[in-house]
Length: 329
Ligand code: GLV
Image 1 (cartoon, rainbow, N blue to C red):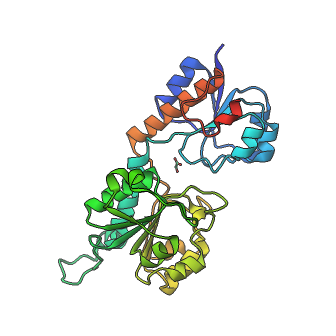
Image 2 (image 1 turned 45 degrees about the vertical axis):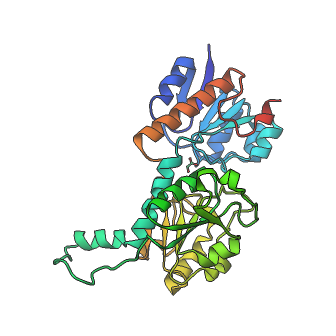
Image 3 (image 1 turned 90 degrees about the vertical axis):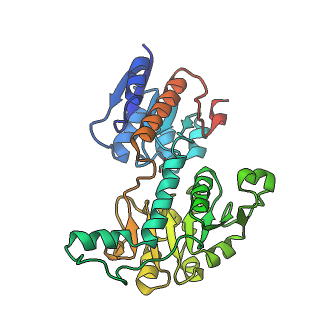
């Protein structure tokens, strides 16, 4: 009969097609709340649940779940309690690699967009206020020559570094903030001699653009808080394409309003889809609705990978991209 797949939100082709070829697919008509998801996972009717970032699979849900595994339609998996999943023998899989460039593009877009005041400028034109070229109209700042500080130095940070070097930025990084880990030249590979590792405190103090590329964990929750914002340069810009809760968003609104820092480019928010009070009114921000991986080919590839993960799990095999392979042992 094949696998029994619960898909919490319809995913693009070819994901659904692959799943249908491999078994029985149930796609929920609307995003389930926690109670609904818990009861579906506990029903014993599904082998694998294919989840989105908005589906929270916490310890109580996983304790009651009668599924073999979870295939998360994302590279990040902070919505799943991995320790609890492992304890209950539930394997979790994700979609790494395929969204690296797309997300780095959005980081670069936010760097350029905040530097050149793109949302203000766009609004200016649409509101009919553009009356011709002016020497001092909507002046921004140069990206080339400015210091980019990358918090984290994983796949997406490296892809952002590559782009930033192309734009003539001085690229610095701190690999695992707030802790330290020395990255050897060998590990730096193509970046050796082109980017500079600095301690987290220095990264915060020296960056013109501070861009976040860390997974959300207990260690990185509110990594950028009021104290860190105060350490940043007054004309610095914060870029976040990682996870919203890495930034204390209320503190960020305060800092942007009071001129503690100059601007922010955000693709993620602390309590998505809600924004911290006052954030939407600030003109010195570029705000996107979590679009890092949002291109047609990337989402199709994520769908394919998440389906392949789900099918492998249903067949009792190790999925191509396991997060907790130990759950199967
Ligand atoms: C998106 O945020 C992802 O983790 O894939």
